[in-house]
Length: 72
Picture 1 (cartoon, rainbow, N blue to C red):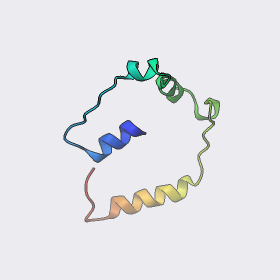
Picture 2: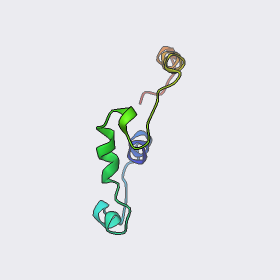
Picture 3: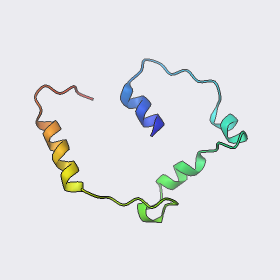
Picture 4: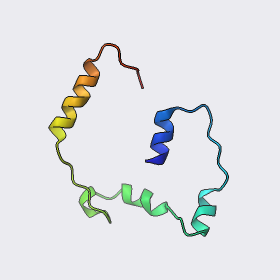
């Protein structure tokens, strides 16, 4: 989600100090997150269940129909 937020925000440049290996060495290894993404939602460590898809689709359809939207 953090990487997604960075790309959606479209900054011109990102600055960082520590690498993923540095973070992992300090106990903040997020490699498992990338492995989890490949697993079906119900089988993940934290099960993810979809709700209200039709309502969410209506919001996206309203966005698509909006004539003055900012293109992302």
